[in-house]
Image (cartoon, rainbow, N blue to C red):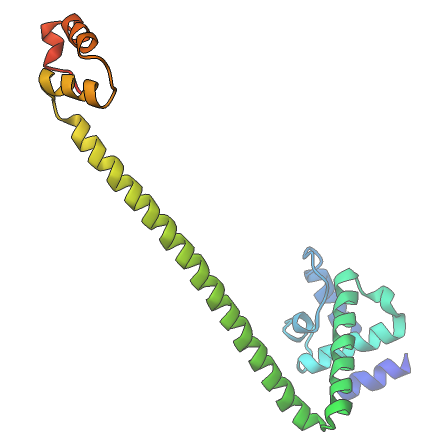
Length: 192
């Protein structure tokens, strides 16, 4: 491949032997080969990441998309879609490449601020709901606690009799008969 030899000298690509050594050393890894991986490899000595990117682009051009796995193909599609969006925006807004980079930077900053604002609103709503829920639980537990404290104290037979007549609306004769059935030893332990 004379074209590969020319590009190797232009971009500073390593030899095929060095590439093969890198692929052998990383063959157990379950991800596709990326320009970041090749650029940082100690076996395949690329000049920089751009050189590794050019290497991968050459083999994709030479072999076609069969050289890529699914994630690689998805990555290429994403990059091509981004490129199309940038070119379209350059035409619509009549910007050059330098201005376009600044424009995209501002758009990303606006999107980031908008997403942050939405996240803050969502967090405030969930915090407010949680505070309301905790407040309701606290009020309920205070009521239960008051009832529990009141019910834990020992009541006298006269208090029990008055409670049964007023709250349960039982007839006084029935209440007297029920209290007469309670042995004297249990009267002291009776709680309502």
